[in-house]
View 1 (cartoon, rainbow, N blue to C red):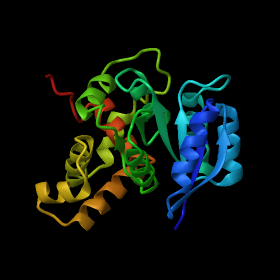
View 2: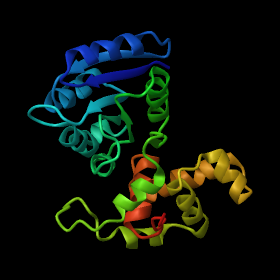
View 3: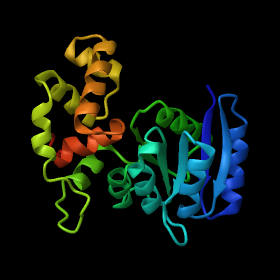
Length: 227
């Protein structure tokens, strides 16, 4: 299966570099380029992209707004957005996850990191770049933001629908652990973990593992570590 990639960045030179890199891989291809968020949303629909590499700072509709539009569209439920940012350690990290992104990556990342990010996102995994640790994300997500209208006050109650084992798995997912790692920790098979993750996603209305991380912290199920 070929991963269909859309590039959204207002810098043409950067898009060209990404295109050459992506198109050099046998399992992926660039299906479109956008210079602003509105164009990114339109092309995502038209080209049926699997993964969108989305810059945050673009003229007009920015990357965060575009990500929200993509995430809110039922017809684009299978699309994964990877946010590209120059500054990884800032509030954009949290905003991108809350907007529905599957993760984020610094523009200074190595080519192999970018390609791996595309594959991880396409596979429905949460992508957290090395420069932004789970602990950092947790601290941001735990902050109360009264102005954030996207927060769901009923999220904590929705956790009541999870079984005890699903809650255990959710805690492990929030810790950034893979299915194999969770299986070893809980002494079950990776397939069993995958089943619990999928059921938790369905019950909580999460698009992917990244959204499970957001829910785990915002609901209070997991608390940020104090360094």
